[in-house]
Length: 367
Image (cartoon, rainbow, N blue to C red):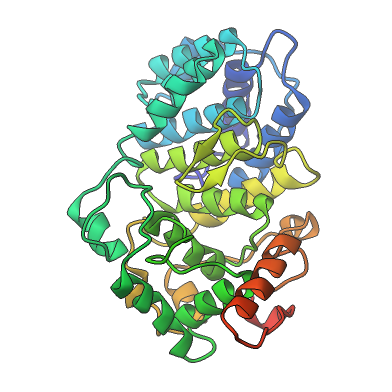
């Protein structure tokens, strides 16, 4: 939830603020409308009417006077998310975002990114992402969690670390039902290469593969949006919102040509049927986890031998909403949770290694 849950009257005010901040000259786009409605439904339990009376930044700030900075920051991030789904982003909207954030006393690096998008300065926007305090961190804690001694940047690939590769390969020896074994099978079924070997994902990006298994999300690009939405809201550090902003900029608008050291732009995936509902539900599930979880800086190998069901219970993971499941949210071993390309990659990898190919099979029991 959005910290202390708002009542119906406050939700109406919040909705007016969000709609006022992100509406262009012709109002909300169809996708914006879907996202705003889905977000309020999932995060507050109330349905909103986006055809509402506008409110000024000053009026909005006064109405939220009793709310603390974290609450106000999260509301600004709802505004940002609702703006980032639009391309081109009108300059007027970027100005409104800045005005509402200023009135609320909120500072967020992603407002700078919104202004870059509105100006068409996409290369500068990419620089803003790279230097973001959360994504750009390379402190000792992160390096220890990744089990690497050094990286040139947070998203650097590690292709020649035998010790790191062996650590990932050891997950194959864990019992079925453990989190680590789930990740091992997840990799095998998709032909993914372990970090530390040529052709692998950056170790930092590989951290999110554990979340796919833990939270029950497949590996189509729509699922990637869900995973990063879940991670962004499971972390109490508001800067983690940049993860979701990055993925939306890759897989909906294409504002970013590449990101996270591996992903390439592939626009239009948030506008597919039901995705607004799935995005909002993933954020709800992340927000409802117990405690704050920085899944990118977590030493997952410390949890690898534990039953995945136990780890889910410990973080208070709630089930997906029925609406999200009906909208197509699939787990790693459910139909729709894997792509044809990944299936072919797994077959090719097995043949190249001289191993018997074990075909991916739907297995609801693993979800």
